[in-house]
Image (cartoon, rainbow, N blue to C red; front, side, top):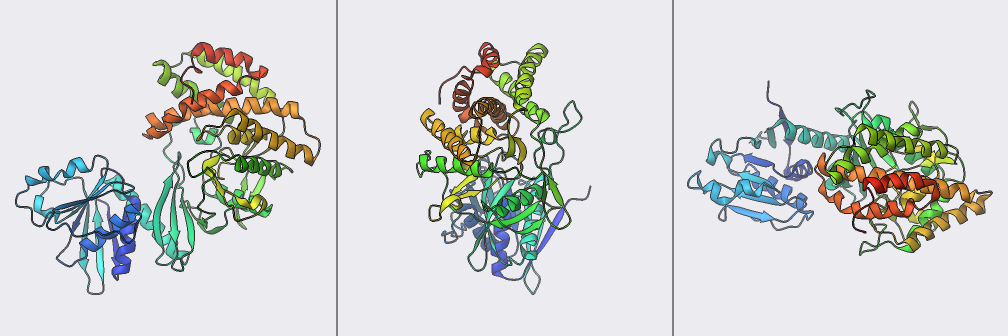
Length: 502
């Protein structure tokens, strides 16, 4: 098989700096980037740009490690800059700790030829003087090359959108395939880049479809565009989409603000949660259309949050959480008894009000904009997985925020604010809402127990496990409603609710 080789032309030093940002976004712990080129070819300039991008500091002092041989920096990913020009013997490489440095970080290595083939598996980047600039030639392991190729495609997308020489910085990766970047234009405006490639190579379930399709998770960024446009059209603060490439899964959108929804100490702020509850009530004032335009040629159909989707989500508890807690998989009888109880609850849920459900309506996806007025103070993000389902679902998502401990008094304040606002709009069946809320809260938190374990065990994202005690506490609250009595007994007997409080 022919090795994958990428080439990028760098006409000047500014282009080399931006190229460093493109590489930095693509790097992952364990990567070794071997930089080759003659003296003055720009290796140190490129390494300096990568380090500054990883550190998020364009003014960071990055001296050449020619005499120290290695210089290390704390950054988004710890980065270690090696210069092997003065290395006397390849065996000294072990003493420098290069391979230990890449266990949790990345290594940038100038003059890798000094150690022969001891950097097998590295990403190899050669800089050549073309007379009119530099030509960068890159080769390396397939997985790393795919990451770099994607990053370079994002640069081309920005250029084609008119954002020439825009600066890029990694913002976050969420619990899905999506990743986000902050883009700063030449004029200093800030944008958000959504990188959401189409879902591929998912394992198939017994039904012959992957989990994401059964759960009605977005298969394309078209859903993000359609939902954001529809919400903006009704006067709420979703992001404006400035440029889109639906085929490759890239969006350039409005940056809604810098202030997180939580306090600077990471605690819930009552005023903000109550206002978000009132916003939900306003979103639910009228029904939403099942069809939402993406552009002049394409329409997105809002999927139903149906029994199949709700059911595959709660199955994560028996598939992932139960083996994690009990040390064994659920048997057929346990799975059948579990789903029988849930199906009876889903049948009840079908009779309650349905409306727009954003699914993850909680603190990570809300931006607080104190300088604005009314609902414009709340910026809405992460809209791509919206469905039509129980109106109570997003209230439960907000009032029992998975990412921060919500005291019972604050949960009640959120619920009461929503219900009061709905009652002001017209007839509102509070008894029906309370039952729907209890079922939705139980469904969501059952799903989250399984999801967080799956993220830790399958996707190697262990920081979600810390939320499990909080989610169990939320489940105990939600299941106090009489409609959950039968399911609660099942959970108690299976030990699903046992554990420390948050």
